[in-house]
Amino acid sequence: TADSVINIPVTVKDASLDTSNVLTTSGETKQAVISNNISVNTESSLGTLNATIPAGVTVSGPAGWNGNITLLSLVSNSSATPSVAPGTTVQTTAVVEIGAGDTPLTLSKAVRLVIPGKAKQLAGFVRGSTFTAINTTCTADSQSAGDSLADGGDCKIDNGSDLVIWTKHFTKFITYTQTANPPSGGIGGSTSSNSGSGSNNSSGAPQCTDIKPGSAPTLVSALAGENSVT
Image 1 (cartoon, rainbow, N blue to C red):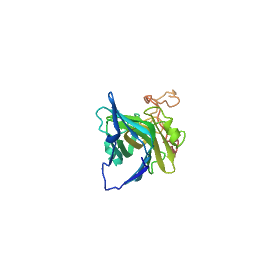
Image 2 (cartoon, rainbow, N blue to C red; image 1 turned 90 degrees about the vertical axis):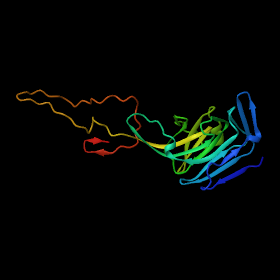
Image 3 (cartoon, rainbow, N blue to C red; image 1 turned 60 degrees about the horizontal axis):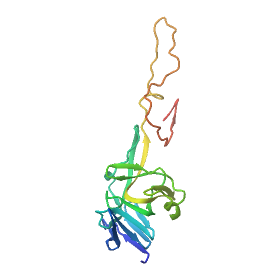
């Protein structure tokens, strides 16, 4: 029942919290109530990852869940890939995991995750092969703001140079950057002139013949050139 701080050195892999002694079963659902505040500090190549688990949170899982919760850890960037809009390039910068792999675990209260050095980056999560972007900005970096999220919801907010994710579920979380690919035509591309002997016809103003994109791109930067902008 006492508040706990768990420090995981970089040499320890797959540390987990065993809640089996407080696990209860109701129909097809298993639940564990964590009665004390738990702060998990995991040393990694990024710095110290942190997960703050609030007292009184109920962790719910399917009937096959054994009560183990893998504590926050840094995993390979290749283990999860974000989905992006056509015409963009994505770079995964970190993947962290907490929970029970692809077994869905939901939370009655929000857990705070800190990913060092990833402020201003994009974030999302993966369960199985399904990627979901986290587009909601938290109203504040506080327990009350996190708890106000919908069931299974999450949000992100910057705290100095760190990215903070408040979440009501456990899985793999991703930070990444996304940039628009240079256009293959249009402004700055090649143009053709229409000329003929003895003709005064003019082709008029240049026309853009690029295919209309299926969705709006995200503007991340603009580089001015001579008669063009990238």
